[in-house]
Length: 330
Length: 290
Image (cartoon, rainbow over all chains, first blue to last red; front, side, top):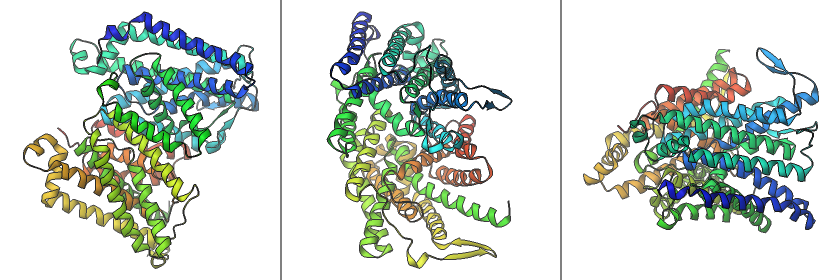
């Protein structure tokens, strides 16, 4: 592991971050100049997946926890928005056991609520997973991912396997998410704020303790820092961001589906973090962009694009053992 | 619940349990001995089903299909271990997750290239295509009973090999402490290949038996892989005995959960059970490493 001070040479990272965000921001005028509205959809996807991968990297890259349940947390956030909108559209109240509440199509309410639900679910499942470590942790998070996946597949009221179309029109403080250009900038703004927050978080005392626990948990405990609580807090924050990203995706697509929660998607997110680099805050943004562009290019070239893509992932995994590529171990 | 339904569901649960045991035995040994998380274990299950279906359809003989599929999956496992995965034993778990995740994509796509995207036809062998009256009024398909018998037979055989042969002693020694076993003169490289090949063949066996009752299609190994991981975690990584107990438990809980509980809860019950077991015993029911 590289010295902490050299990873967080704040200025260089801040400049790279700003450059990345400007490049992404230019994509919208570029798409309209080229007359390719399709391009805007791609870049919106890149921004939302960058947000999700950044959430994962807080626990994976900085916390050393290989979580394979982030696709489920992402999907969960989308379902919060979609289900609340469904009850708003059908005017039947949502029953939550003892009490009921009305649905809403206001994303200013449902998206923060999605983040809250994401944080709570991540905290509960994270607490169960963090009882274990290493390989057990990986397998358990994978199992929890599938638990949430099967849960939504079994929810026939909300479309089950087929997913849930958002029929009413969503509203984000007066903005209709179906208007692609302004909504893209909303997503980009959310990404920018999150990255700034994460950059500050990993440089703070909290981040130091988290990174310390990733490298040597016993030593961190020995100096009197409750590593478990730090890891759990990081997991909950990560869950909140991932679910919020899922809420944004529900707005962008007007559709949610359990397919987006399948465990393969969690694997994709891990691949994004790894190819972008695990020990910077901006790495997952590069990784998400590279992943989605590669997927787009390969799938345009052949329907069997998963074959070269799988070989690429195997090559990345193999080369990570070589010193040159081996800067960020988790 | 009537007695006949109860009996039928119990048989279904035990049958799912023995299938899961065949899957988890390889998974838990590969993890326990080589310290490798093999997410691609489900791909070997899929390959077993495809090899058996393609051979049986070409030759008209189910038995030939079984023999060819077992040999081919064992060979695939051995080649995979020698060419690629042995490099990953000393790597981080993250690297292992990545490489085996990449392998899943590659295997799925290769199968799709060779056999196409539609499920492959795989009929129950004519000799077993009838129902047996297990109790008055309770009919049960003979093929499913055969799966049950084969699964229990293989479990007994594994027990004998692991507990009462020299090879089994090496395997147990390797699972509890690899370095010491190597220092005591165990040819660990040989044990690694054999364990990987045997694990692959067991996964292939589970796949080829599931083929005629489920569907032989791309990605068929992935739901089973998840259940096998749950079994491995509950049983304790590296413990074949733990895998057997946990596999039967998971098979029964899953089967009865789906009958007795609401669909949403039924789909989640084994994962909840797993979480409860781990809160009680974080290293599974039968921990192997000290």
